[in-house]
Length: 178
Image: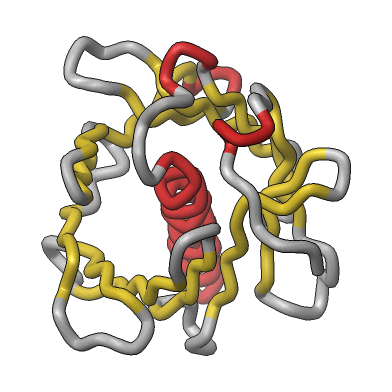
C-alpha cells in the first residue's frame, strides 16, 4: 500500500469507500488508488476498530446500550482523545482537537448522511451504494478542505454507518426469531 495522503494535499472532492476483500472487515478510502484512510474492525462484533490516517492510527470503541457512545484514542496510548454520543436519528457531535462537526442524516430518502458544521453546511457527504456498506461514495466539500482531521472524520462517519447496518441486521434477526 502507498503512503496515506490527505484530501488537501491532492485537492480531491469525491472518493470511494471500498471493502477490497469481502471476507475481511477492512475498508479503504481511495481515489485512483491513492489511499486517504483505512478502517479495520478488530473485534468480532464490530465494537472496536482501528482507523489509520496520514498522521496517526486511532482505536475507536463503541460502548453503552441505552446511551451508546464511542471513544477515540491514539493506538498506543490510554488517554481518550474524544468521546462522541451516538444519536443516528438526530445529531452526533464530535469535537476533535479543535474541529467540531455533527453527523446526521442528509437526505434520508436517498440514503445519504453527512458531517455538517455549526452553520449546518455539509462538510462531508456519504452515499452508500450497497447493502452491507461494502462500498460507497464520499463527497468532500472543497470549501472545507482546510479543516484538520478531515480524513479521520470521513472514516469515523463510515464506522457509524457500518454500526448502524449491524444494528439493523440484529433487529431483523430478532424479528425473524419471533
